[in-house]
Length: 350
Image (cartoon, rainbow, N blue to C red):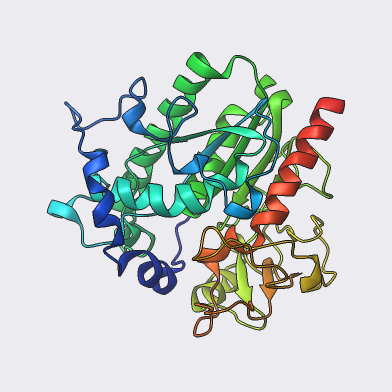
């Protein structure tokens, strides 16, 4: 398993954990697991699934006239939502925790997974995610066990999905943060060097580094149309180097910065260091789900990261921070939505 390193604590905790707005949704998630494990034949254990309505089905108001097509599936792994004080000391989220499930669905599933709903059926399994503290823990063995349990759920969910619902359809793997950490392993185990790679439209592994030496046959997407490849980025304000990144860069063997990680520019879908002006940003979906903010930010790759000038939109919550992890997907919502369609179209042509 790859080395863990500190990432994104301040931004995740302040953005996701300091609000009780998810309390109102808790009554929707009051189901109980008999043995504490997910049962993926039960739709309660899917945060998003095409056989039920869930927040991933939501469409921002300006996009309502879109024509939908769903000949492709997306398997989406959401980021960490277990950020409050550990409940009863649990190192992993309880699979039936009504607050965590409500928080997951009305943050990540609504604002991130919905980006795929024009062109895809969306599948997002609930999993016993590791508590955020595991990214910073000095007890590496305990942290590794927490991530191992999370991956066990993800793997079981993916196998159940393949057997029960996929029916040889093309697949997109998409993820953010902890979900991307787990998605890399899923790609390694199920796609790299396997026949399933032939059905991979693209993998959007966002908000987590993809080391260039982690995969052998899975490659980086070099343009906006290539299929069977990976897109990945982490977003920061121009000139900012996080303290943990400095530690990464000081250890060349385990370095994800300094150009040693895959990086995609989501405005151009290239991997070079060319500057992309904010005019190429076709729209962000931020705090107001039904408002599309255009030209919010530019983008440029440097030293294994995606750098941007401070995003511009009314009431910007990025004013006081230089880490835009929470906006990795949302800042480029419309560009991603368009790119999904382009790659699917190319996949069918091929």
